Length: 402
Image (tube, one colour):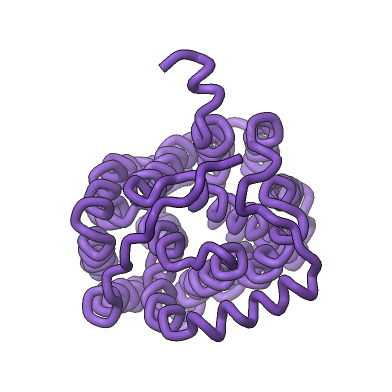
């Protein structure tokens, strides 16, 4: 493939390159945020609120993001949301109290929801139906590569420059991604039609009313799925720091090595979804994660915790891009933005629930008990998708982009 073909590829420069850079930047924060929260001297419940603050903000922003995308267009929504998320997260460097930090995390999440809904819609339009699983799995793989590279860099940056300086490093890296997005992403697509707010609200209600059955079934599974996924990002660093007494560099290494296992499976996950069906990847993914979470209370050394975290990474890797693929499969073309806003609202409900459950259960009982609650969520996700959710039907290919 020559340079012109690379430049004109509908996904490479407009989507995959910015996605990778942003994945690295978000990965920088994985080992930093739990320790940063602990430095305020708050209890587990408040720490869980800070760690889940971004997910709570996304929860509030998902549906408005779907509406604004119809009014603003896909690219402006991505840029506006991405810029807001970067500014709010970099602002954690200056946060004087944990209350301010929680507010910034929620603002970052609200802004990030705009970016996430718009990029989901863009990839759903740009990827052909027969290769959709691989496209979303590749996007998920890029996120996993970022979570492999990012945590180790974040731990090193925090060690060398200070814990809060990692937020400024994040800001610099993320701005590079937004620059690539601004330069290469197309201004519009054949299905990116701007309409007034009144029309968008009517379409939102019509979408929910027409698809409430599938939203209920698939949504229940997604809530449980995202609960265990988000919960692992909180519980593994906290368990390593508070139970095993490991420092931020060691925590970053564990998270990165777990992510290495995770990211190695994105291509097999995409093949499974495209050739054998979505459930062939989704069900094993969350059952394996549930087993790994149940083993965390037995991890009494750094090596055992690394092995357990790697097992969880293996399970998560099998589900690379699965929830995005499923959402794209189920979304009606005419109201895709509205549907995906609701779909992400459901998923982000699970994402916000995970860290909150870890914080609350740990405060009431202990971190090992929180791990068992996460395991139950993962097993529940496997059962819902395996028994209650039918395999999505294949849809005909969409018209080419303008």
